[in-house]
Amino acid sequence: MIVAERKPLEQVEAMIDGFERILVVGCGTCVAVCMAGGEKEVELFAAELRMKGKLDGKQRTIDEITITRQCDMEYLEQLAKYVDDYDAIVSTACGAGVQFLAERYDEKLVLPALNTRFIGVAEGAGVWSQRCMACSDCVLDQTGGICPMTICAKNLLNGPCGGTDHGKCEVDGEKDCAWTLIYRKLEKIGRLDTMRKIQPPKDYSLMTTPGKYTHEAFKETQAEDEE
Amino acid sequence: MSKDNAVQPFEPKVVAYCCTYCAYTAGDLAGSMRLEYAPNVRVVKILCTGKVDAILLLRAFEDGADAVYVAGCAIGDCHFLEGNLRAIQTVAYTKKRLAEIGLEPERLEFFHVPASDGPGFADAANEMTRRAKTLGPNPLRKSITQAAGRKLAKESDEHPPLPEAVLGKLIHHSERTTVG
Image (cartoon, rainbow over all chains, first blue to last red):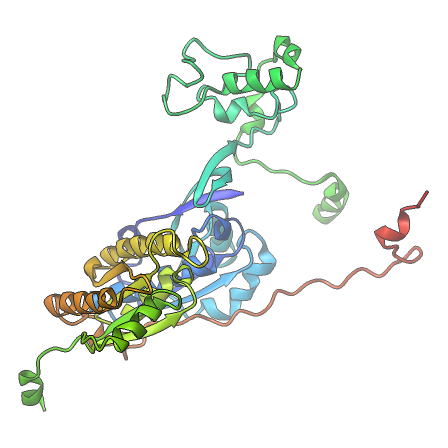
């Protein structure tokens, strides 16, 4: 899941300064789960903006709507009948959602209300941590299900660096050393021999942005469409 | 009329979200004990303070409440184990949102009021009324009627129709599996 956090209110206030009619668009998928931009959060955020506007003596309208997803055109289509009424749209989606919304309604100003953090998991109530950096070449089979690309601050693929300190990382003493975790895990499942294998140099070209991917099953129809 | 208003002292409106098991029962007890407390408090009975959400508290202020408080069970006494602990978190979070907007966070508070504590219930009501009187009226009160936006109606998502089976009928997965 993509994890994001809300920008400070004053930052969004500065973005929408001078606009009278504003639509806050929520996204009901990843950011709803990480309590940043779902229906509930949009309700709270829009209420805050309304109250702030009134306290500052502004005459402005903040409307709100939350759609299922902002990264699919089908769902963005639902906004078509509303957007013309607004001077600006504030999106509480991840960066991808904001961009797709701006692409669909390209005559409108679309503003981000969140800072997108990472692909991660929910560690506990209200706590998320990064687990994947989308390197496009997964090595988790070799590392006992612990990602050295993400968990190791230096993205090392062949064992720890000299900075490992009793299971902690030299970059940040609070963080675990990925390779200590990997060693312990492989020891537990009796696969320590996989650590002897030398990982070839990582193909970082796969991580060149912007990434694009077409599902095998759709490649032919895609080619036909282009013809 | 304005002259009348000038002589009338400010009487705040205070909203109290009280849990049915502890604070609300304490309110009953305060009545039975013939305790006198600020009449400014409007009690909203809720099943558990764990139900309280930031938006619920913010809405009260949006609608002109001068002070709002949540009264729940003592630590460890919640009927639903941790509802009051959640409410403490929610209130702390909402206080930050209030500060962000520009309203005094002191207008909002959480109180532990056990069912046997009638005087505690009266103290909480008096304390919040006193705070509201010190801070003055909620500045949002004068603009309650000013329209500032709403929630738009969302249509349910359209799902594409299931494809017609061209080659034979679609078989349910359970029909596929053979037994024995």
